[in-house]
Amino acid sequence: MTEYLTRHHDVVAPVLAFDTDVLADRAEGIWIYDEAGNRYADFACGTAVANLGHNHPAVVAAARAQMDRFIHAGCVFRYESIIRLAEKLRTITPEGIDKFGFANSGAEAVEATVKIAKYITGRQGVITMRGAFHGRTMGSVAYTTSSARYRDGYHPILGSVFVTPYPRPYRWGKTEEESTELALDELNYKFKHEVTPKNIAAFLVEPMQGEGGYYPAPPAFLEALREIADHHGIMLIFDEVQSGFGRTAEWFASEHYAVDPDIIAMGKGIANGLPLSSYGASAEVLDRWPVGAHGTTFGGNPVSCAAAGAVIDTMEGLLPHARELSAHAFERLNKLAVVHDSIGEVRGLGLMIGIELVKDLESREPDADAMAFVSKYALERELIVINCGPDGNVIRFIPPLVTGIDELDTAIDTIDGALTEYETS
Ligand SMILES: Cc1ncc(COP(=O)(O)O)c(C=O)c1O
Image (tube, rainbow, N blue to C red; front, side):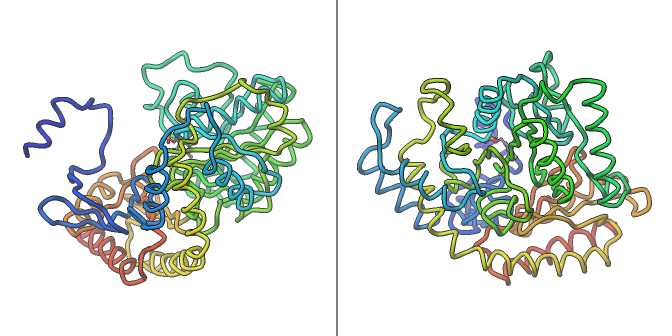
């Protein structure tokens, strides 16, 4: 084992899972370089974070300028970068979201959204979707069912959390319409047999499930949730931690739907790598959450907020390119799906694309070995791709928005080559 890995294993807790053993020396744009001068195209974007590519100059400059002035405020004094960021967020978030709080991680932002819903409705129940990923703190792990392993050893999990199916047409072998109907039937059974709607503070939902396998919600499902929420006084929370900030070639995945949430959670790409997350709701809602009912020491750090401001300014101009990349990627990947029997389905929104690998097109049995083969083959050819889904068999295809068409083609060629070799081995 190389020296740094030995030292790493000696002192870093093994619970922290790393996708590769690459020892990064520096990173720029889509590339990560190691000390030996090898480079890797990071199509994992640091797990869906560096959407603008690593060390984007505008983001670095904004963070550096803030660092030169002061780096911490800790809610003791006020500062421009947080005000300016909230003003910008108001212009890009869904209709009706106009005030914002800040935290450090996606899990914290999600927990804040649930606290808001509970506080405002005076109700304690939360309905989450099977296959969802909302984080790994004790609160958010209660809402996370993308894999039971995230909950192993931590029971009892937080109470009054009810899990309902999220439509998965491919896995269920049903049409989008049938899957939506089935999921809504199950929700109705829940209301009939387990908990009445008057106990429910919120529906917590990813408009496109991430970790759970890259499943975009069928529009009719989100529309129905909106309608049921309105009817019963339930708040609709969208977790856009992974699907936000250009990942779907729009600011947020919810723009692909005619549905606006009451509360939104944001993180990951918000500051392109500096630690920051945010939650937003209407002024009417957030003005009823009293001073001190929630808070954080580091959340909304001045440097992270300055960086996030630069992310928003920069990303606006990149969204058209992201849409072009998306159209090109879908065209090429759909062609690959015709050629490769190991590709069961290509699905997604914008540049949040899942390529589901299966052992057999008929049985649709997940093929985690194929995924492991693709990752290894790609890494040997300067490309980092990671997986998602409870079976670890979905290629999480998330190029940085700054990727060139040629670079995208090279990455797709690499996946093509990997699958050809896997299928003929
Ligand atoms: C949709 C979603 N919500 C919440 C989280 C948790 O974010 P964090 O790891 O920053 O706590 C993630 C992380 O992958 C996510 O994808």
